[in-house]
Structures are given as C-alpha cells and as structure tokens.
Length: 110
Image (cartoon, rainbow, N blue to C red; front, side, top):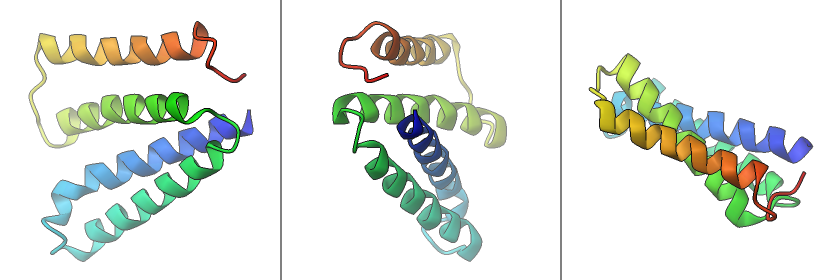
C-alpha cells in the first residue's frame, strides 16, 4: 500500500512541475522554474520508490494517465485552455484505462 502513496506523491510532483512550465516562460521566471525542477525531482524520486514493488508498466500507466488528466484539468481552469466534448471523452477513457489496469488486470499488485 505504501507504494501507491509513492505513486500519488509522484503524480502530484509531476502535475505541479508540468503546470508550472508555462509560467516558467522558458526558465526565465525563477519561482515557477524552481517549482518545475522540484516538482519533477519529487516525481521521479517517488516513482523510483514505487517501482520497488509495483511493475513498471502498471506504475507508469497510472502515473502518466492520472497526470495527463490532472494537467488537462488544471490547464482548463488556470490557463483557460478550452476543452471540448472530445477532450472530456478522451479524459474519461484515460481514467477508465487506469481503473481497468488497477481493478481487473492481473498485472496489478495489491
């Protein structure tokens, strides 16, 4: 169970880092640039801890899938990026894929 907490922390780090990239303005703004570096550092460190017990394919699918969904939603709310019905359908399919991997696949470690 601890490894899943590591994955969640890795996702938060990746989402913070990715969300700050636009504000970092090609690393010319110091504070958002620091958020990018620290966010990605946390993401990869905690992902590496999770990989001690979770298969890499499953861990990466969860990490990337949920990261994509959260970054898209943050871009929509914070940066005003328009999401149409197809975008929401795609997000729903990503979430469905993560759920299938975790709840139905035999590759999942619980």
